[in-house]
Length: 285
Image 1: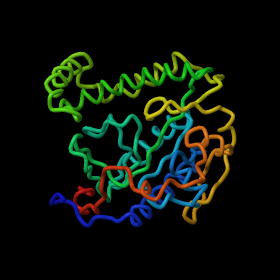
Image 2: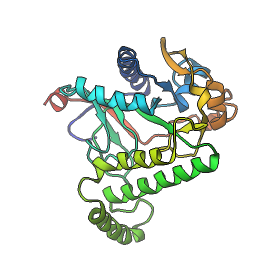
Image 3: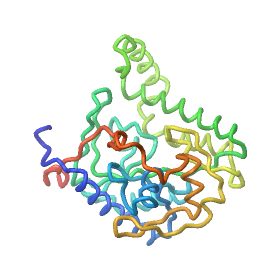
Image 4: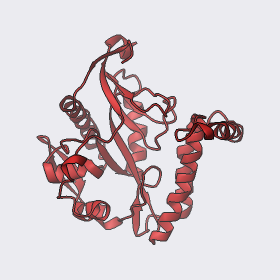
C-alpha cells in the first residue's frame, strides 16, 4: 500500500459505495431523461439476488449510444468543477486503457494488483458501456468487433511498451510502441474512441437488427434491438434501477441458465484491484 492510501475497503463497503454512486448516476439520468440498463453480472445479480452477486466487486450499465453521448456531454458540464465525481476515460486519465468510461467517486482510490499494467488514477467506479448498432447478421457483427479489437490492441501497445506475457516479446513490443507513437501522434488517447465510433457509424444504421457493445467487450454478443425497446425497474440492494424488459433473453444469449450459480470454488472476485479511502487533501487539492 502506498503512503497516500488510507484504510482498505472490504467487499461489503465497496458494494455500499458503488450503490451510492449508482444512485447518483440514476438520478442524473432521470433528471435528463437518459436511458440506461443494468448489464452483465450486475443484471444477473439484480435478477438472481436482488442486488450484487455476493462475490462480485464491480457494477456495469449499458446506454444506447445517443443517450451515452448526451450523458458524457451533460456530465462534463454539470460536474466540471467537481472534486469528487469524475468520468474517467482514455482522453483524460493517464495510462487508462479501457475502451469505455468509468464514473468514479474520487474520495476512494483504485489500486491495481496487476504488475503487468501501468497504474492509473480511479476511484470507486461504475462501468458505462455504449450500445451501438451491430449490423443485420452475426457475421457483420463479428467483423465490426474484430476491427474495434484490432485498434484497441494497438492502443494497448501505444501506452505500454512492456509485454505482459513474456520478457522476450518486450523488445519487439517496444519497437511497435515507438512506431505507433509516430503514426498516431501524442493525441491518440483523445482520438481513439472517436475513431472506433466513426467506423461503426460508417457500417451500421438505426434499422439494423442487432445492437451490442462493440468498442469494448471480451466477446461478440449481438442483442436483438427489440429486447431493449422497453425498460423495467428491478430491485437492487433496496433500490430500484432500470433493466431491459427482455432481460431474460439478454442474459441467456450470454450466460445460458444464469439462475444457476457457479460451483462454490468459482464464487470468487475476478478483478485485480483493491479500493482504499483517499486522504481528503488528495482529492480536494
